[in-house]
Amino acid sequence: MFEEISIEEIDEAYSTNSGQQAIAKKQYDLVLLDLFIPSGKNDQPNPQNAANFLELLLEFDEVHMPTHILGITRMNLDEIPENQKKVFDNNLWALLKYADNERGWQEKLRLKVAYLIRSKKQLMSNPSYDYDVAIFNALDNPENKWVINIFGKDNWKRIEHPIDKTCNYYVTQCVTSSGRTIRIVTCTIDIMGASAAATVVSKMIYNFRPKYLFITGIAAAANSDGGRINIGDIMVATEAIDKANGKFSKENGLLKFVPDPKSFHTDPAFLSIIDDVQKDKELMYKIHSQYPLEDFAPRTDLNLHKGQNGTVPAVVANVDVVNEMMFHNRYLQGIEMEAYGLYLAACYSVEPRPKAFASIKSVSDFADEHKENKYRDYAAYTSSAFLYYLINNKLEY
Image (cartoon, rainbow, N blue to C red; front, side, top):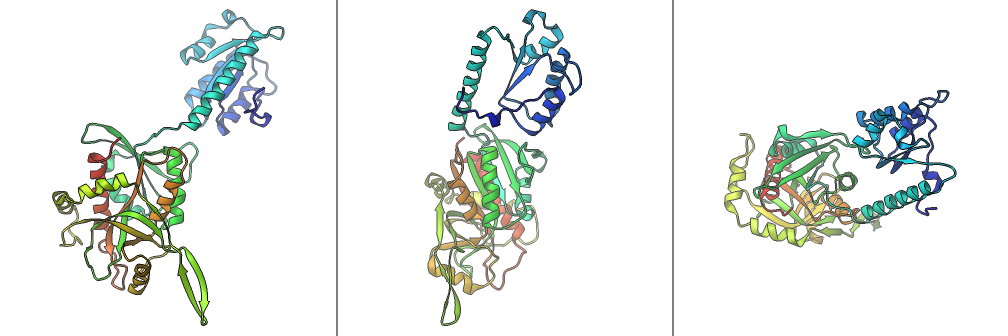
């Protein structure tokens, strides 16, 4: 009758026990529940079993709640015991009387199924944002640790996602400077690289439908002599470039890599916000001065930069490698391992795609032979603190 429904999508259960097993494994759009149903395979039907089944749905988190439940019975509705009807009445679930020699109930059922099909189509074709902000970090320490701390360590709550058991998600709420309460979700899997980032970010977009998407953490500055970018400086990636894309070949017996960099850009409207904030020296001073750790905070002023970031599949600690990258992208400002994966996932995500996304990472080293780890905490802190400011003061929800 409905081309949208195949016979393989219809399951039958002949007792409440088998019905419980079915809804524990799968979420159904519609459950037709015969009020006169046995509890087990060899048991006698009893109207109370259906009421017990519905109460179980409401009590246990292990089951998948059906979108709609319709009770069906041969009894006249005034013959159904009050305690059994009460379960339906309290939850606004409908009851339908059916009979073999009548067709009115079939038309009612057809209209109900048609309505559910139409509403689900519209829901799938017009998805809306759910969470306001999603923050991904490659590393738990120091990157995600500082996100958690900056937004209030005690305010986060770990959630059990019903269909994603491979990632730990933490959510919190905060009130922006305009008085708007927003929801934020964060996740890390402690695996570096663009592939891991693209995988997890894609899941975050699908599971939480965030309006804004960010990655914070640590990166290397491409200017190995210090230049205009200093330790701790915040780098917003206007463009994330896959520096590992290309071709390996041999020339005169020597292995050679010929790069073919691919890239994705962030939203121009978001970059206009960055242009405005770059002028706020007081904000940069405040972030720098409020760093809570005494050790390993650089004495240079904190600054904000925007430009191209190169994503690589391995840690870089050699100036010749940096120079080779800059030969092909002379305006390269930073080198890190995840931004391209996040930008790729955001650009090719399911709807609704994030309104804006960006890599906001701070400088912990210069990718040269002097690379060390002592500024990692400071860099993770400044990137998280800056994102906190943006979320609370500059983004529109």
